[in-house]
Image (tube, rainbow, N blue to C red):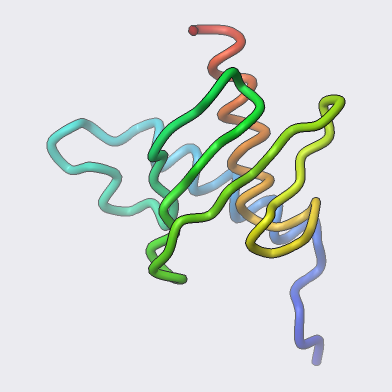
Length: 93
């Protein structure tokens, strides 16, 4: 058995959490989503609150490449969430 999930699975978790976050209302504040958006700066610096880790997580985009400072990875669930959030902001502002 693997200690760490396959990276595509981690990215998929981020995608699922993004969909849960997107479908939530302001009243339930993303009750089902593991990740909540705290703020986004110029679509290049994103800070999330991870309910499982109980801490803030930062994802940075440099030359359009995402990097999670908390996980020190480019393929974790935070990056998966950030990619979709970046696309959402690019489309809807």
